[in-house]
Length: 244
Image 1 (tube, helix red, strand yellow):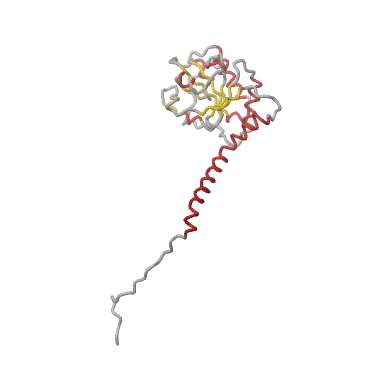
Image 2 (cartoon, rainbow, N blue to C red):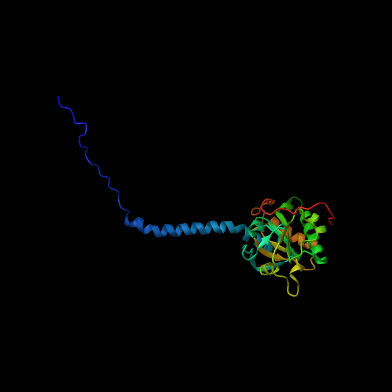
Protein backbone atom coordinates (compact mmCIF):
# COMPACT_ATOMS: atom_id res chain seq x y z
CA UNK A 1 0.00 0.00 0.00
CA UNK A 2 1.35 3.42 -0.91
CA UNK A 3 0.90 6.61 1.07
CA UNK A 4 1.22 10.23 -0.08
CA UNK A 5 4.39 11.83 1.16
CA UNK A 6 3.62 14.31 3.93
CA UNK A 7 5.65 17.03 2.26
CA UNK A 8 4.45 16.44 -1.24
CA UNK A 9 4.52 19.57 -3.36
CA UNK A 10 1.23 21.35 -3.66
CA UNK A 11 0.14 22.97 -6.92
CA UNK A 12 0.82 26.74 -7.12
CA UNK A 13 -2.30 28.89 -7.38
CA UNK A 14 -2.04 32.32 -8.96
CA UNK A 15 -4.67 34.99 -8.44
CA UNK A 16 -5.17 37.35 -11.33
CA UNK A 17 -6.66 40.74 -10.50
CA UNK A 18 -8.41 42.65 -13.18
CA UNK A 19 -6.96 45.98 -14.22
CA UNK A 20 -9.27 48.99 -14.01
CA UNK A 21 -11.21 49.50 -17.15
CA UNK A 22 -10.61 52.61 -19.25
CA UNK A 23 -14.09 53.83 -18.34
CA UNK A 24 -13.28 53.61 -14.60
CA UNK A 25 -10.13 55.64 -15.14
CA UNK A 26 -12.12 58.27 -16.99
CA UNK A 27 -14.63 58.41 -14.11
CA UNK A 28 -11.97 59.51 -11.58
CA UNK A 29 -12.01 63.23 -12.52
CA UNK A 30 -15.80 63.12 -12.51
CA UNK A 31 -15.78 61.64 -9.00
CA UNK A 32 -13.34 64.33 -7.88
CA UNK A 33 -15.63 67.06 -9.21
CA UNK A 34 -18.60 65.39 -7.53
CA UNK A 35 -16.71 65.30 -4.23
CA UNK A 36 -15.87 68.99 -4.50
CA UNK A 37 -19.48 69.78 -5.31
CA UNK A 38 -20.63 67.88 -2.23
CA UNK A 39 -18.11 69.78 -0.09
CA UNK A 40 -19.34 73.09 -1.50
CA UNK A 41 -22.94 72.12 -0.73
CA UNK A 42 -21.97 71.22 2.85
CA UNK A 43 -20.27 74.60 3.29
CA UNK A 44 -23.30 76.35 1.83
CA UNK A 45 -25.55 74.45 4.22
CA UNK A 46 -23.39 75.61 7.15
CA UNK A 47 -23.51 79.21 5.98
CA UNK A 48 -27.18 79.23 5.03
CA UNK A 49 -28.48 80.09 8.52
CA UNK A 50 -26.28 83.18 8.52
CA UNK A 51 -27.38 84.19 5.04
CA UNK A 52 -31.02 83.48 5.85
CA UNK A 53 -30.97 85.50 9.07
CA UNK A 54 -29.28 88.46 7.39
CA UNK A 55 -31.73 88.28 4.50
CA UNK A 56 -34.65 88.15 6.89
CA UNK A 57 -33.30 90.99 8.98
CA UNK A 58 -32.23 93.37 6.25
CA UNK A 59 -34.47 92.52 3.31
CA UNK A 60 -37.73 91.08 4.59
CA UNK A 61 -37.87 93.23 7.76
CA UNK A 62 -40.29 91.03 9.75
CA UNK A 63 -41.48 93.92 11.94
CA UNK A 64 -41.98 96.24 9.00
CA UNK A 65 -39.64 98.78 10.62
CA UNK A 66 -36.13 99.79 9.51
CA UNK A 67 -33.12 98.78 11.57
CA UNK A 68 -31.92 101.22 14.22
CA UNK A 69 -28.33 100.05 13.97
CA UNK A 70 -25.98 100.51 11.04
CA UNK A 71 -25.25 97.44 8.94
CA UNK A 72 -21.52 96.89 8.45
CA UNK A 73 -20.83 96.18 4.78
CA UNK A 74 -18.91 94.08 4.25
CA UNK A 75 -19.06 92.51 7.72
CA UNK A 76 -15.70 92.12 9.46
CA UNK A 77 -14.42 88.81 10.85
CA UNK A 78 -13.13 88.51 14.41
CA UNK A 79 -9.32 88.78 14.20
CA UNK A 80 -7.02 85.97 15.23
CA UNK A 81 -5.08 86.14 18.50
CA UNK A 82 -2.01 87.54 16.75
CA UNK A 83 -3.99 90.56 15.54
CA UNK A 84 -6.24 90.92 18.61
CA UNK A 85 -4.30 89.79 21.71
CA UNK A 86 -6.82 89.48 24.53
CA UNK A 87 -6.21 88.76 28.20
CA UNK A 88 -8.47 88.40 31.21
CA UNK A 89 -8.10 90.73 34.20
CA UNK A 90 -5.47 88.41 35.69
CA UNK A 91 -3.33 88.68 32.55
CA UNK A 92 -4.11 85.20 31.20
CA UNK A 93 -4.26 85.11 27.37
CA UNK A 94 -7.73 84.54 25.88
CA UNK A 95 -8.15 83.29 22.33
CA UNK A 96 -10.64 85.53 20.47
CA UNK A 97 -12.14 82.37 18.94
CA UNK A 98 -13.47 81.46 22.40
CA UNK A 99 -15.95 84.34 22.03
CA UNK A 100 -17.75 82.63 19.17
CA UNK A 101 -21.05 80.70 19.34
CA UNK A 102 -23.00 83.56 20.93
CA UNK A 103 -24.16 87.01 19.94
CA UNK A 104 -21.89 89.63 21.48
CA UNK A 105 -22.85 93.14 22.57
CA UNK A 106 -19.51 94.90 22.87
CA UNK A 107 -18.42 98.04 24.71
CA UNK A 108 -14.95 99.49 24.14
CA UNK A 109 -13.57 101.86 26.80
CA UNK A 110 -10.56 102.36 29.03
CA UNK A 111 -10.57 101.29 32.65
CA UNK A 112 -11.43 104.77 33.95
CA UNK A 113 -14.87 104.37 32.31
CA UNK A 114 -16.28 107.89 31.89
CA UNK A 115 -19.98 108.80 31.79
CA UNK A 116 -20.45 107.47 28.26
CA UNK A 117 -18.85 104.16 29.24
CA UNK A 118 -21.10 103.86 32.30
CA UNK A 119 -24.16 104.55 30.17
CA UNK A 120 -23.16 101.87 27.65
CA UNK A 121 -22.38 99.25 30.30
CA UNK A 122 -25.69 99.94 32.02
CA UNK A 123 -27.62 99.76 28.73
CA UNK A 124 -25.72 96.61 27.79
CA UNK A 125 -26.84 94.89 30.99
CA UNK A 126 -30.43 96.14 30.83
CA UNK A 127 -30.82 95.14 27.19
CA UNK A 128 -29.66 91.60 27.95
CA UNK A 129 -32.01 91.29 30.94
CA UNK A 130 -35.03 92.42 28.92
CA UNK A 131 -34.52 89.50 26.51
CA UNK A 132 -35.98 87.14 29.11
CA UNK A 133 -35.40 83.48 28.28
CA UNK A 134 -33.31 84.46 25.26
CA UNK A 135 -30.76 86.43 27.28
CA UNK A 136 -28.28 83.54 27.52
CA UNK A 137 -27.80 83.77 23.76
CA UNK A 138 -26.25 87.23 24.16
CA UNK A 139 -22.92 87.80 25.89
CA UNK A 140 -21.91 91.20 27.28
CA UNK A 141 -18.31 92.03 26.44
CA UNK A 142 -16.25 94.96 27.71
CA UNK A 143 -12.95 95.37 25.88
CA UNK A 144 -10.83 97.37 28.30
CA UNK A 145 -8.22 99.49 26.54
CA UNK A 146 -5.29 101.37 28.03
CA UNK A 147 -3.20 100.51 31.08
CA UNK A 148 -5.64 101.52 33.82
CA UNK A 149 -7.53 98.64 35.46
CA UNK A 150 -11.35 98.70 35.38
CA UNK A 151 -12.90 100.73 38.17
CA UNK A 152 -13.55 98.47 41.14
CA UNK A 153 -17.01 99.94 41.78
CA UNK A 154 -18.16 98.71 38.36
CA UNK A 155 -17.07 95.10 38.71
CA UNK A 156 -20.02 93.80 40.77
CA UNK A 157 -22.36 94.72 37.91
CA UNK A 158 -20.15 92.78 35.47
CA UNK A 159 -20.12 89.35 37.12
CA UNK A 160 -21.97 87.82 34.14
CA UNK A 161 -19.97 89.70 31.51
CA UNK A 162 -16.72 88.94 29.71
CA UNK A 163 -14.31 91.72 30.69
CA UNK A 164 -11.13 91.48 28.65
CA UNK A 165 -8.11 93.70 28.18
CA UNK A 166 -7.12 94.54 24.61
CA UNK A 167 -4.73 97.00 22.94
CA UNK A 168 -6.71 99.95 21.65
CA UNK A 169 -4.94 99.87 18.27
CA UNK A 170 -5.85 96.20 17.80
CA UNK A 171 -9.51 96.83 18.62
CA UNK A 172 -9.58 99.86 16.32
CA UNK A 173 -8.33 97.69 13.46
CA UNK A 174 -11.46 95.53 13.89
CA UNK A 175 -14.29 97.78 15.12
CA UNK A 176 -14.86 101.21 13.58
CA UNK A 177 -16.92 104.09 14.99
CA UNK A 178 -19.15 106.34 12.94
CA UNK A 179 -17.40 109.26 11.31
CA UNK A 180 -16.52 111.92 13.87
CA UNK A 181 -17.20 109.62 16.85
CA UNK A 182 -14.68 107.97 19.18
CA UNK A 183 -14.38 104.18 19.32
CA UNK A 184 -15.96 104.25 22.79
CA UNK A 185 -19.19 105.92 21.60
CA UNK A 186 -21.05 102.82 20.41
CA UNK A 187 -22.48 99.44 21.21
CA UNK A 188 -21.18 96.92 18.66
CA UNK A 189 -23.09 93.75 17.73
CA UNK A 190 -21.08 90.66 16.71
CA UNK A 191 -22.73 87.48 15.42
CA UNK A 192 -22.02 83.94 16.73
CA UNK A 193 -19.49 83.29 13.96
CA UNK A 194 -17.38 86.18 15.21
CA UNK A 195 -18.47 88.61 12.49
CA UNK A 196 -18.99 92.26 13.39
CA UNK A 197 -22.22 93.07 11.59
CA UNK A 198 -23.85 96.08 13.27
CA UNK A 199 -23.03 99.31 15.11
CA UNK A 200 -25.62 101.19 17.13
CA UNK A 201 -25.60 105.01 17.05
CA UNK A 202 -23.96 107.00 19.81
CA UNK A 203 -27.34 108.54 20.66
CA UNK A 204 -29.10 105.17 20.55
CA UNK A 205 -32.63 104.49 21.68
CA UNK A 206 -32.71 101.42 23.97
CA UNK A 207 -36.14 100.29 22.78
CA UNK A 208 -34.99 100.31 19.17
CA UNK A 209 -31.72 98.53 20.00
CA UNK A 210 -33.74 95.86 21.79
CA UNK A 211 -36.00 95.49 18.75
CA UNK A 212 -32.99 94.97 16.48
CA UNK A 213 -31.42 92.41 18.83
CA UNK A 214 -34.68 90.50 19.18
CA UNK A 215 -34.97 90.47 15.41
CA UNK A 216 -31.59 88.84 14.83
CA UNK A 217 -32.16 86.37 17.66
CA UNK A 218 -35.50 85.37 16.18
CA UNK A 219 -33.94 84.91 12.74
CA UNK A 220 -30.99 82.84 14.00
CA UNK A 221 -32.43 80.35 16.48
CA UNK A 222 -30.57 77.37 14.97
CA UNK A 223 -26.99 78.58 14.82
CA UNK A 224 -25.87 79.91 18.18
CA UNK A 225 -25.39 78.40 21.61
CA UNK A 226 -27.03 79.54 24.84
CA UNK A 227 -24.57 80.13 27.65
CA UNK A 228 -20.79 80.19 27.59
CA UNK A 229 -18.41 77.73 29.23
CA UNK A 230 -16.90 79.72 32.12
CA UNK A 231 -13.68 77.74 31.71
CA UNK A 232 -13.19 79.45 28.33
CA UNK A 233 -14.00 83.05 29.20
CA UNK A 234 -14.59 83.24 32.91
CA UNK A 235 -16.87 85.83 34.48
CA UNK A 236 -15.49 88.69 36.53
CA UNK A 237 -14.94 87.69 40.12
CA UNK A 238 -14.97 90.38 42.75
CA UNK A 239 -15.94 91.06 46.31
CA UNK A 240 -19.39 92.52 46.95
CA UNK A 241 -19.60 96.24 46.38
CA UNK A 242 -21.51 98.97 44.71
CA UNK A 243 -23.45 97.85 41.62
CA UNK A 244 -25.31 100.36 39.61
